[in-house]
Structure formats: C-alpha cells, structure tokens
Image (tube, rainbow, N blue to C red; front, side):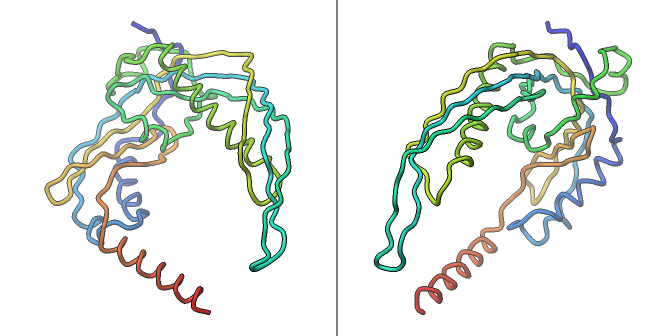
Length: 238
C-alpha cells in the first residue's frame, strides 16, 4: 500500500466533462462524418488516479555528424562534418501513471497536470469519487520516467545539431537532483458507443483537456492519400 503524499482536486465537474465530449469529437480528423451525431456516452465517472512524479537535473553531451546541402539539381551533394555540444535540462514533476486501468498513452495525451497545485493528502477530497490504489511501484515507474526523459533529451539534442541533415547522433547524459512524489490526479473516465462498438474517452479533471480512442474513416484516409499522390504527380511532371 502506498499512501499518496498529495492530491490534485477536481476542478472540472461531471457536466463539464460530458459537454467537452462533443467538442472533442468535432476536433477529430479522418473520422466518420456521422461520429458526432451517433456516438453515445455510455457513462462517465470521476477517478483519482495514482501517479508518481519525478524531478531530475540532466547534463547531456552530444556528438553527431551534421550535413549541409551544397549545389543544386544533379550537382547537389551533402557535405558532412563532425559537431558536438552540451545541453542542460531540468525535469519538473514528470508524471508516470501508477494505474493498471488507465491506458498510459491516453494519460500522456491529457497532460500536463498542474502538479504545482497539489495539496496535502486528506480523505475528504475523495468523497464522491473513486480512488484507485497504486498498481505500479516506484522502481517500475522510474524506469518508465527514464525512458521518457532519455527520449526527450535525444530530441532536444537533435534540435541542437546545425545544418540540413543529422546522422550518428550520440547522447550521453548524467542525472542528478533526483526526486519523486506520489499523488492522486483527477481524471474523468468514460466509454462511448458508435455503431455497436465501444471506445474510450478521458478528461483531465483539472484542465478539461480531453483525449480518447475513435474509429477511422478509411474512405477519408483513402481520399487524402489520393489527393497527395495527385499533387506529387503534378509536381514531378513539371
């Protein structure tokens, strides 16, 4: 059993989370045209989801080969040179769900949570809501956090490489000032149905940011691919 150190209270009520559902559906691309009209919210519940959050100061040295385009047309070539650099970055309250029920990809899509507003844990905050127990221990969560940090740092170092191209990027990072917290974060979790199939929908209970799963319209995707191919043919035909 893990006793959460803090709790982030719900700022979005049930009605607000349900109203956000239609707006979220309308923002989707390449989905069936009648999705917004026929999708029915089957139920919605407020859950305090357990999270670990991590702090870390990072110091990264990177090396790479930077490529610069030279010439034009048939005489175009890439001139490569060795480059290196140094990057410092601080991760503040990087969240990792400790839930077995909430899909971690959906959880990431409704970030960030305003963890600077965490309040000391008190059972009174849980009144009227469900609260899930910790299903991921600290060691497992830290491994996930390190993967996210490493990926973020690799992308940040890649952005530091000058020129038009990059290859053989190597990033070496040292971590310090590691810290963690445990906390309960508010999430509205719902299911909705469309043409007999069930899909997932979640809302950040503090910010109202929404995400979910939804069916694809392969007709729209096919049309978009066809238009893109037609444009490419026109470009190369000139």
